[in-house]
Amino acid sequence: MTLAPRTDPLAIRQPEPGVDLHDFDLRPPILTIVQSQSGKGEQAGNLRRTDTDEEYSSLNIIPLRVQKSRTKWPSGEFSRDSKPECWSVDGTWAAPGALFEGNQCVGCEFFLASPFDVSNEERKNYCTPDYLAIFMDADSYDVYMMRLAGTAASLARKLAARGVIRRQILKLFTREQTNNRGKYYVPIVSTVGHVPEDDYTMIQSMAQDYVDQDLHPEESPAEAPTSPVEPSDPSVPTRRQPDDDLPF
Image (cartoon, rainbow, N blue to C red):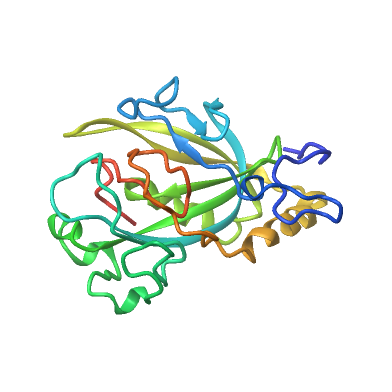
């Protein structure tokens, strides 16, 4: 696959001289998966761009960055109205607005090095590891951010693999799964091809804008979103889906 000529990219993280964009246009738009129980989106299983409501059955992407993060949810039974108690955008320090804002995660009483150190029942009492992934649309040059949590977090390994991140073009789509709580969709990738050598320098340059970028929000969120699948700000997690009980 050959990348289309880069003419007017929609995602500009570091504007060129003479370009002055609003802050919301400097942050990658969020991509979510339309779930049948979410109440948002047209077709369950589609990838949904939250700023424009555009939906895609699949996208050809190039992974640019995979960043560890963490979320501490209230203990107790699952509720769609639950808000996170604490969260970290870098997996190391509690983010602005979080319960333990500014504290180091590893020293917290709720810190869990691996989700597999405890049982599924005990895991809900701890701070859960998850990921933020940034990738570029190989066709439009849009850059998206996607939170990978629960059963979706295993995708982080594939995106971050040596020889894949910033090197391969992947097809991103979803697959339906079923458990005792119902049906849901998870993200899947398959290999399309390698980034052409002529485009590799450009991809590295674009990726560097995001590799060097601190993903912490400039302002503390006033309130964590209540939607179970669609965060309004990637720095503030939303309540995990009931099927997302196997964080990576």
